Amino acid sequence: MKGKIIKGIAGFYYVHVPEINEVFECKAKGIFRLQNVKPLVGDDTELDISGQPKGKGVITRILPRKNELIRPAVANVDQAMVIFAAAEPAPNLNLLDRFLITMGRQNIHTIICFNKKDIVDRKDMEMLTETYIRSGHKVLGISVLKQDGTAAVKELLKGRTTVLAGPSGVGKSSLINTLNPDARMEVGTVSEKIKRGRHTTRHSELIYVDDNSYVMDTPGFSSLYIDDIEEEELKNYYNEFNEFKDKCRFIGCMHLNEPGCAVKEALSEGKISSIRYDNYRALYEELKDIKKY
Image 1 (cartoon, rainbow, N blue to C red):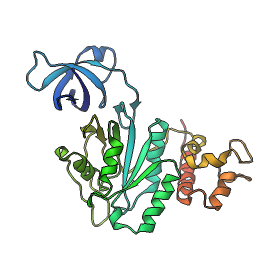
Image 2: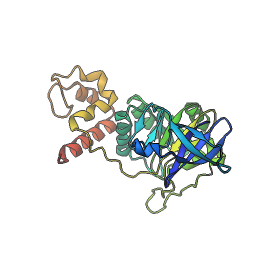
Image 3: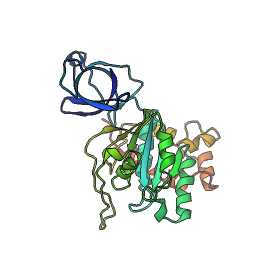
Image 4: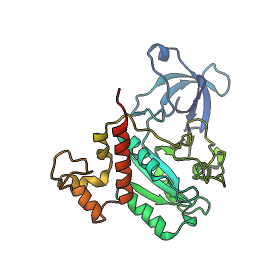
């Protein structure tokens, strides 16, 4: 029997078998420990339920992984979807860029979803959308509350395993409950005082949607460190620079203070978002200041 690990807690692995839509609580064979192989959420497995109590099983084989992410620790991911609120709380676009860089380094395509579009001005929504479409990402504006755009989200998830991430209070759990009411995710509230979400997700797990579609809900994040890359590498993850970088006067231009920089010229002409560029500068300075040991 074949299935997918959807959750791992204290040495027990919960394996979903899509053909019968059942979950089995499994232990892994000892051979994996001897081989120094740790089962991951997202692993496709073979399991044996013969001679086991009802609902129990043993993982006998982990099938080859197509990829393996470190943060979050998960295997066989097809794409990521990052969710931010368009307002309440206001989107932290520096944090969004950090997530895009983290996924870009792991060659994971990312879809950007701005929730709560029903409470923001149309021009503000258009600004957010335009900024990130230029970065080469698919961008959706939705309202989970009004059920506006959720069908488009479900279509993008179909037949894929998707890492779902974003800060607390932006509507991640509400979206998952919309996609699969049986998930019954705990919904957090937004603090009126600080306009930030209260964290509800406590561990990473895959949630079955339908048609071999899974979403991995990850704990809400308020910071994301990218201190393991060199500052010279950072520009490679700002896709909107690509159109102009070969026209810079100097090979290896960092697009900061160099004369004859085509990226800076494009910025001054409005062809590159000042929001994205300002985030690039801030992250570059942050990485430059980190002491490398």
